[in-house]
Image (cartoon, rainbow over all chains, first blue to last red; front, side):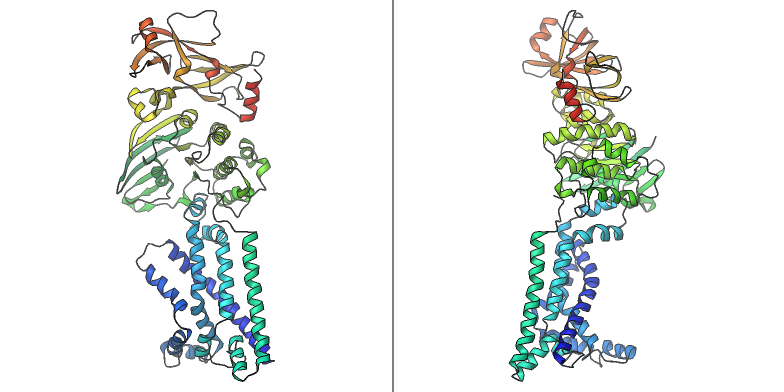
Length: 225
Length: 374
């Protein structure tokens, strides 16, 4: 039963992470796609860090940053009464950082390929900047959003190192699928490890397959041809 | 009548624009010049799509940009319609929804035209449910024009709307723009580097080269100035007679039109009486005669005076005539000598009726049918 809890927890974590990431990554990607600021390469490098850092390094820094002795960790405790590390909230925060490049990069690419044209057309038709974004830019970047959502979801489901560092292995709190598999292998319970691993493999493949197949059959066209 | 006043100064490396416009807006005003002359930049500044510090744009009494007073009205608050060269239709919306997009957001302005009227003029009825990606280039541009017009702008800006189309598509869409210009009553500022489009559509011409305004005025005046021909292009382009349809003689298959100075006869065209029309007369279609010819097949015989003879160096000369309006004739140097043409002489200009632009008005299909029947 605890394995089912792990599956449910993983899905919750991935779902919440994806929602938060879309909200956070949209303005970041929009800014990166449109800015000429000298700050841009700094922000881009920071966003891409999780791609190259070992998860343990990221996890270690997060542990230090979110621990009860740190200002952030202490503030969270005073606010909610519970700690950020070794909790579901901390896990969400870690996942958001860990999957950030998988949200920002496809969105940035989609916004860049839009160009200025569609927005300028929207402006001349009476749409303000925010209106133009939601009615034109976001729908036209639909493929970027689809890619971002799927990649973030799958990547969050698959994370291990960061979770282990920040969250540990608390059933119902931080024991996600990847941790459960690790535990089963450690205790030589290969049958249980097979079930979880196979399930995750099949699920991930199916989702990716649907996305790629949809992209082929109904390409979301960015240029008006 | 609204006046558009703009003072624009842009300096980039290798490009500068320094233009001051003060245009009474009425009918179609063409901003004409070669590629890279700055006409599109000027249009984008007027629209507010590009903001260049220090510029000034005013329409009527409304200040759109005046940096000395810290005023900049963003494009979505300006009462403009903008037709882009590459249409910029929204690919995720149907034709219908593309047009509705602007109408919804133009809420504050009273709609000046029924959607039915515009759909009819631009012949969009069969396209309304389609997606932009399934339309031809000409169809897309017609939808883009409808979308801009339906916001009921005070000023319609068109940025080379035909330049990405091939000749056939161009011929397909020009009559629509022409009809629109006559029927909607919204002033149009039309940017183009193609003299034939300009001759056909514009009532006022602003000539722009290397970022400077070289000349502006009524089209027939500007195109007849010899000193401007390096800009307006080949002398063959001819002249424009701004005419008004006065009568149709259906049994004879002809239409009569009056222009300042006389009357023109053309094959029957599909336009209401009273419609004003730019009739373009190519210089090669005009011959000269010292006496009024009798018993001739030529229907248009206009008395006039030689103003100037321009020897282009080759076997041919261009003769500028005044027949009430300026008119160019291209004849051989031999003829100039034999007739002893001199400035000030009275002559008759002979124009074949068929030289009147075939598809000056109305839908191309209807026009072709009425002409092919003759």
